Structures are given as C-alpha cells and as structure tokens.
Length: 63
Image 1 (cartoon, one colour):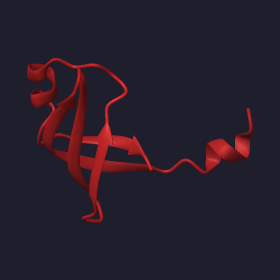
Image 2: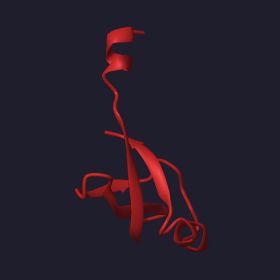
Image 3: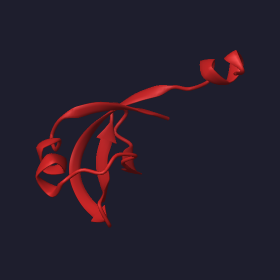
Image 4: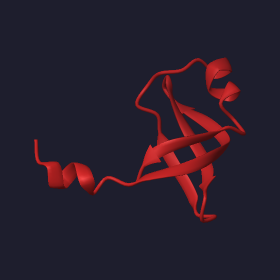
C-alpha cells in the first residue's frame, strides 16, 4: 500500500443533525468543525433507532 496515499487522508469531526435512509443505509447530514455542511452515506447498515441514537453526537469521517 502506498504510504503517501495514507498520509493524505484527513479526518474531520462532524456533528450529526439528521438522518434519512436509502434502503437500510443511513444517510447522515451534519456540520463539520468549520461550519461546512456534510452529507454522507454510512458504510454500515443501521436500524432507524440505532441511527437516530447517533444524532447530536460528533464523529470523525475521512475528508
């Protein structure tokens, strides 16, 4: 694996504000530490209850 590629991955903190679903995959929307809106599809299937339990929490995602 190319170490340079790994070094270029930047992590950002996102506070999750809402969630919708595409099939069983949650699509989260939130705001990063700079105030930029972020929307991303989770790589993991969650139940509605599990996904909603993550709202208002801050997580890290790759930028």
